[in-house]
Amino acid sequence: MDRHRPRGMRTGTKDKGTDVNLTTSRMATVVLAVILWAHRLDAQAGAFPGRRVVAPAAFPAGRKPLVLVQYDMEGLSGQTDWRTQEYRFSFIAGQMYELVAKRGIKPIYPEIWAQGQALLAADVNAVVDGLFAAGAGAVDVIDKHGSGSPEVDLPPDKLDRRARHLLPKQVAEIKRSQHDAVVLVAQHVSTGTFGFSPHTGNPGTMIRMNGMSITETDLFTFTWGDLGFPVILVSGDDQLGIDVKNKTPWVEYVSVKQAVGPDSALLRPVADAHDDLRRGARRALENRAQWRVVTLKGPIDVTTCAIPPASMELLAGLPATEYRDGCLFFRSSTFDNAWRSTRTVINLAAASGYNWILLSTILEEPRGLELLDRINENVGKVWFETEKKRISR
Ligand SMILES: [Zn+2]
Image 1 (tube, rainbow, N blue to C red):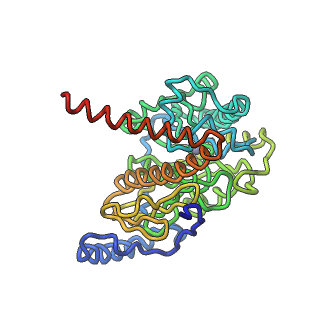
Image 2 (tube, protein in one colour):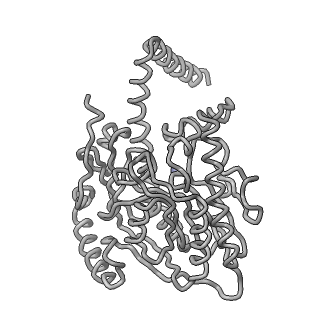
Image 3 (spheres, rainbow, N blue to C red):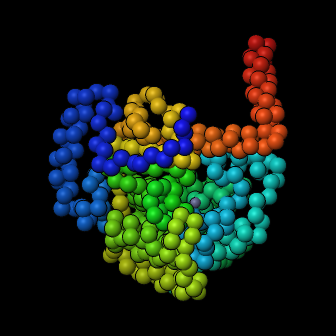
């Protein structure tokens, strides 16, 4: 099976044939056409052909803004080595986290990982400093990276003391809270795009919604937009900067490095990048008239595709979807539903594709076949033990 044949992503796909009910689909198309026409004047530079809605953000006068800083780790200043963003095993769709935590497994490259954490702390702290200089009332920080570490990637004791690092379990709390604006630090371009560490959700998985190519930055913009929060500042490499400026020209962008390939970048002096992050944060917070809440309204036609190391092949035949040439097409009523389904699909595509590499890697080892046989025996053991327990109940 030629699983690793690279496949291009189709462009301009209309995602037809994904509907169970064709009449509903036609009506929806007519309604969508009317809405698109109505929103034509609102469309910003034509960057989003879909039902993207851009609205000024309301900011209550008489109090200091509360800001949420969300970080990733691929768009750090001073970073050219992808190992600075990896703790361990994060490529297996997050499945190893629990085992890493339980067994106290250490990072694969401890010194390089420590460098990555220091770079991360420095970028986030520069932003936090700029936000407070511009009069922020409070700054909360959350980890949205996924290095494979059982802990948050920015050690809370390295964070500027004026800010508060929230734990993943507090994220639900954030969704009910009253933040005024969101900052996205150290972001990256999407899978299949030129830039440093290009990926969307996972290496090899890509997403289109209503015909537009979607980056993680877009996903966060819509996610926070649904909750009424505007994204006001993004940082990352020069290539993501082009995408952000094209789609959301009102958002402050700080380019901290120049991508020269998926695994290399030309660095700016780190002190200069930090000065820009500080200044960018300050400008972003002060220019409240520029704040925009961006939402993506349904129905949303989703295309998820996989290129190696991910694979979509095992997902062909899922209900309410259509599979074609390494891509899965489906329709969702809201952005929230679209993202939930997309996340499941891209994680399965990642696990499925990486499993192929896992098996091939094991077989390259001298005792690889023996190890695979043991895995097979363990599957059998779990199988029969589970069945026996069910009977004895
Ligand atoms: Zn990341």
